[in-house]
Amino acid sequence: MEAPRRYGLRWAWLACAWCLVLASGCARTDPEQALRATVAELHAAIEEHDPAAMQQHLAEDFIGNDGLDRDGARRLAAAIRLRYRDLAIDTGPLQVDIEETSAIVRFTAALRGGSGGLLPESARIYEVETGWRRDEGEWLLTSARWTPRL
Image (cartoon, rainbow, N blue to C red):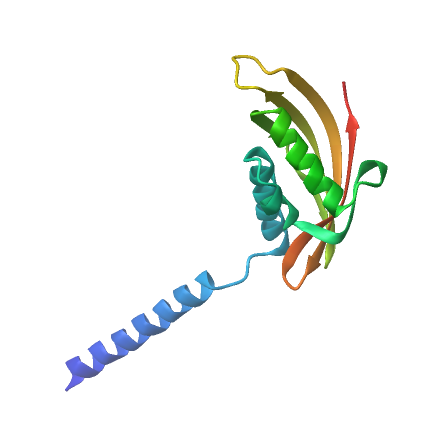
């Protein structure tokens, strides 16, 4: 009778260990990791010329350069889509300053656009500062300010 009891105890420990592994996999991502993922999704939406996907990351009260609002940002993304068939954005490392429900993300961005030829028709480098707010677990872009670097 000792052997079945020992195996039962091993199975109980194994089951507990498995539950801990599963629970750790269900743990929430930390706020910075979630913010970085959202920034990456926004970056992809812009490069893929998807104004609707881009706009879902913008807060209702979004504000950009020269008073650009949420709808204006969507219109600007649509205009860029019409002008440049190929658009690429290279960003430098993200500098993330995070509070409980707000954050500032700074980075350098190099934008290249063209009609599909070998060389881009246009290229510019910007210093970018973005403001973010966490609302019901989701990060939303509340502000963006970009300054030409070159």
